[in-house]
Image (tube, rainbow, N blue to C red; front, side):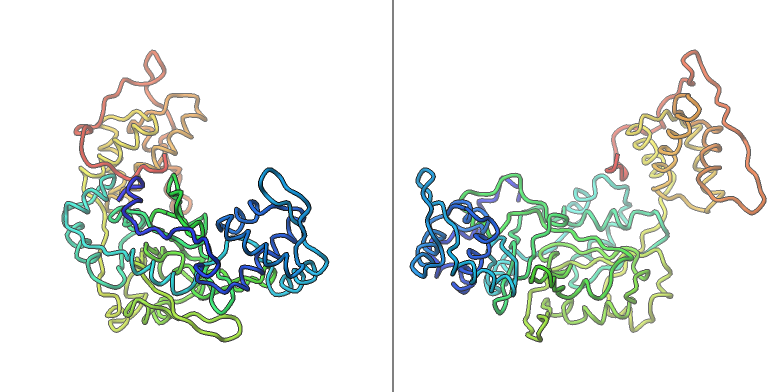
Length: 454
């Protein structure tokens, strides 16, 4: 489903009555009090916008607060009331602020959140054609696709391993393409009158337009993709209480619900691989997780996350046989062949404006095989970028030749102790300062490498 197919979703509509919100009325009153205290002079429309509620609903709450002498009407702007807190309202607002200073969008109930997550569950059912479309900008062999497909169709985590620079993270990041539809993400959820913020602009990408009829406590987004590396700690997998704001921050996997969570550099975290799998053994098996509020109240949330663990470490250093039985699918992502390496080089050179011919491509392959014994798809991109830096320094056109390949690799690879490298940069320049070069053979239509950062 594309962003234009949002109408196919069962969208929650904006409630017009307090009792239809599904949350305690006192919580809504608290939000209005804190919002008024924060704004000073405000209007019903401004409060409704800040709390993501309908103006009619907010007006009904304001009228009740006027009857309790908590709000005073100063006048009108057009057809809207200008409001401020009375002295009684200010005292009540201060009392509420001592508990929480949150004055943002009204939360949805935990039960409503569970229903919506279940309705838009990430159901990965793939075949080779589906994967070829999803990974159309990567160079992946049929053998890799034939291992990756069944791994994605299996419930539980997927383990991607292999040497550095073979595309493991790029593969994991593209998994959300397999299910390109839109999902609803709550701005916040309430549990036991506490507020848990869920929507995160660093994780969730909203649709270009939000349906006018949508309950604005929800945001229509692309399926989330959470990427975390060596910084992952156990605290990130539990609620975090912000004592200054008096609200809870959702853990990473709650933000990733209905999407993908990638643990990159698996095994390099402070949290050990064994600790991570112990933390997720129930969620991965039963699709639920249990969280606890700061004062001990526990509750259940859905765990609809495809977990991908990616590492360049030796699996034997991460765990024993019993450990890996808990990860049903393990896919090796290895080096590429010569033809795929040339595809990457041709595309990278074109994207970066670097000249390259067949002789230079063959020389780069030979040097890489000489150095590491295999070909990895990240190298052509790095070499082209570094060549541009060298060419700028030398005031010449960026052109790959055997000589310039050696010049760049002398900078790129670390040197053995006390060993110096030649040759120096000395391209054969034509009239325009650069040799006339042609494309890498076979550099026309075909699979493309990872060049999304250009």
